[in-house]
Image 1 (cartoon, helix red, strand yellow):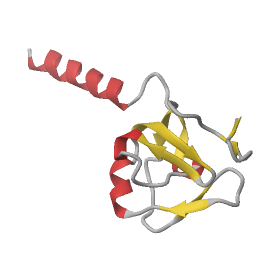
Image 2: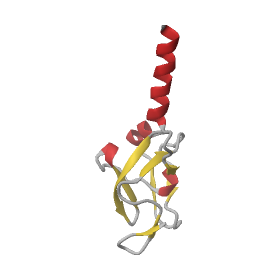
Image 3: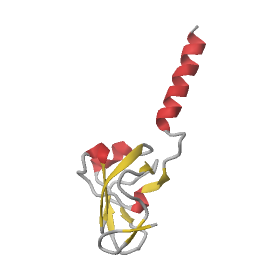
Amino acid sequence: MYASKEGQTIRYQIGDRVSVLPLLENGKYYYMEDGKNYDSIVTPMLSYMGQTVTIRGVRSGGYHIEEDSGCYNWTDGMFSGPASDYDESSLQAENLNILYAWAD
């Protein structure tokens, strides 16, 4: 946990890689850990479900991410946690290796 400029306890810092929940609901409210600040999912955010993203900015009500150029507000409840070293790009590379091996 970290403290933001506003003194709020936040889970992530700028530059942290986090995993977006694999299932998000359009229009549903997702909260920050403090239980007071929240925001809802809008349709363009659904394209990031299950992906690893990078925290671009931190504000009292949530986070901005690099991948959407900071357009949307993301909250703790929209992330499953820090990204593991074995993220979706590693899985995609492994799947390609399997495909190439099978094709030979």
